[in-house]
Length: 339
Image (cartoon, rainbow, N blue to C red; front, side):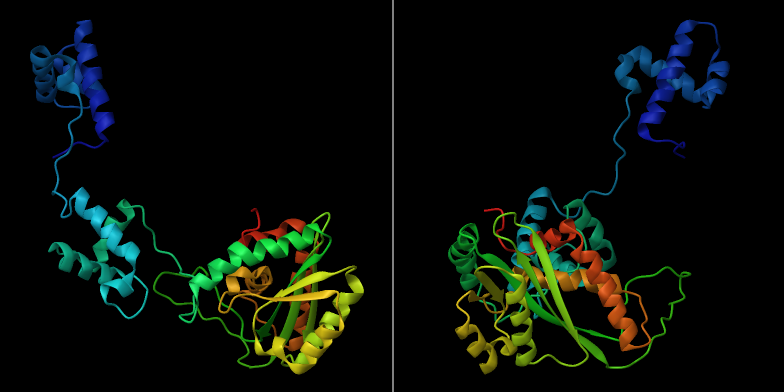
């Protein structure tokens, strides 16, 4: 039976036993008692030391079951996994332990139980993560072209005295977002809330000043779905607060292409409108304003729209007064801001 302790601890015990024997003041029984070993073990260590010196006291690697995959096979497996599940014939781009076990069996003929695959992945430097959503309709080449060529032109306009304004809309319902909580093992907790579809629609604009690059957040809330008239009214308010020209960046949503919005923009030369590439919400920093708000509302249970509205006001107030939090929305986006 292997004694308790790590390999280093057991090696230190053997070396201590030999050091005590070298002093010549203690017998084998005394040394065994001091180091917590048997007399026969101390005698065996002494004999090994006489024959091979201190190297005989070194810790030895504990033998175990040989790995099912070699280093070369693990490297090849990583390449297969990085190519994605779609390349391996699966219908969704999500890796599960069961799928990875199947790939290992097909590629290398090694059998892994799905519940044990995670140990292999951890050893390869992988972890279980929540993926970001991406639409299949995305045009990655168009997005990269916009980031490389169009965005530098827009950013250059800021150096010439124009504000950058990132605009987006969202909605918040009385049905709350639920995150994790603590509870006794095996007893799923229950979170009670009103099951109503009532909602508050919100529109926000994150403005970056041209000189000091100070961020300002503007918001409006409605207890109904937003229309093109609401968007026009919001932009009209922005004109009152922002001096000089500004670039208005937003997505290609239908509400942004309403007739009343187009006519309003065409009459105000101060506004230069720019669409983000289609299906690329990660480019818009205003999207991350809503992400922070969603986190602030997690595990809340408002009983009315008025209470929900007050929660939204409190969250927005905290965000508006912190340049650090506002800049976190900028840097969380995929805009090449530092270039």
